Amino acid sequence: QVQLVESGGSLTHAGASLTFSCAASGVTLDDYAIGWFRQAPGKEREFVSCIAKNSDQAIYGNSVKGRSTISRDLPKNIVTLKINNLKPEDTADYYCAADSPHIYHVYGCPTYAAGYVSWGQGTQVTVSL
View (cartoon, helix red, strand yellow):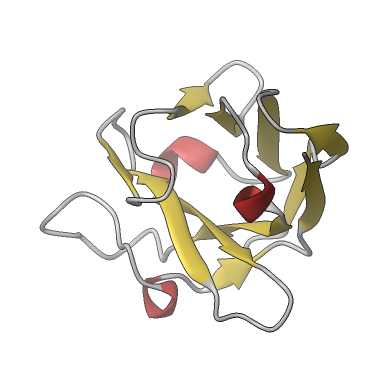
């Protein structure tokens, strides 16, 4: 498994932007499909976005589509997720996850949690009005 560390969570206000980072040591993240999920208190884990391995092919969940960007910073070996125009309903713990490097995904990257085998500890976001 890959050890992932998220950062970028914050207490912020509606309309602001946040950029999350997902980092790992000892592996090349480009060899993994990376997904971002979030979980709000009392709610189920929700798919946010993912990026395919060795590619910039990305998928976005409906809740952030059109106001978010996932990308790879290859020199830094991180995956970033930027969400613009934050809303109070974006309040959640955000997690990044990595798949198995040996699995090929027909649609580029999984949009479901079971498609990932390594998870970070999460970073907390609170968006106030």
